[in-house]
Image (cartoon, rainbow, N blue to C red; front, top):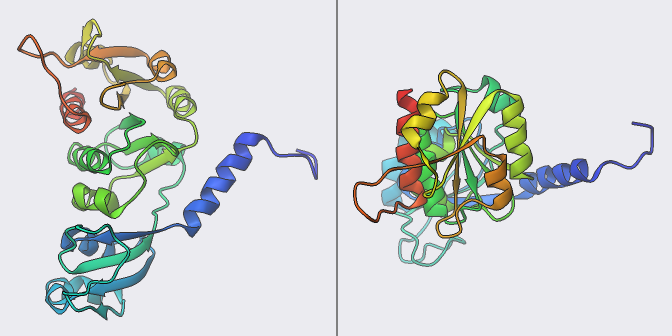
Length: 262
């Protein structure tokens, strides 16, 4: 590129997203989520607010982190989290994790050559549960679009039960482009669709030893048209009854189990 030449729009958007991520902070809450973040050396930790009772339970993790906790009155736990959040007397302000590029994580990352892609799944509880299942079944990453997806939040982290610190959660600028990049890396992309003719087991068996990407859409609308078109194959989870439906996190767990058996 010539000096002074205008950068392509996708490069500008990617750089803007990285700068936004660097500025963004997140409040994690709950003993489990806070403990796992405290002992994660990759997590940039900014402020720890705990009650005396919570500090006693987190003493080892706090010592390992080297942080100086702020002791809060349990009756006035003044941190910017949603009212009614079950914080258990512990909250930690952090910066979002930087897992690296799609290629770094999906080609050379830890775990099976298996990833989960979420198309506009915005409920943090669903995404947290998917992260937890992805960790259990050894997936390399959970991938979602930067916009119209659940960001890294305290509610997501609490539902993930520590998996957010260990399971890469990659938010990409364009999901279809990320899918095409995965296909170029050798991944076979299986989109879950209740109306598909092929069963999930058959699709997984047909993949043989190839790396797999499981693509799931939001409850209700399902996969967007462009996402469906980019998948290599559409498959359904068969139900025993005349009517059956799983929420997206349960469907992800079933799909991950099926893929892990291959």
